[in-house]
Amino acid sequence: MLVILVVTLSRRLRSITNFFLANLAVADLCVGVFCVMQNLTIYLIER
Image (cartoon, rainbow, N blue to C red; front, side, top):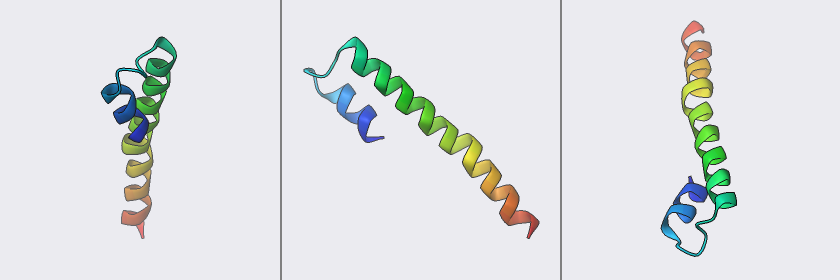
């Protein structure tokens, strides 16, 4: 979340490479929210 925030707010850090890194951070965040949390709730509900 911090990488996304810094790249979007800082004008000096707006480059193609940093946008790519921010995109990877968004993908990691989505995996964490949608995949890990879903599996965690499945394992907790079964017990």
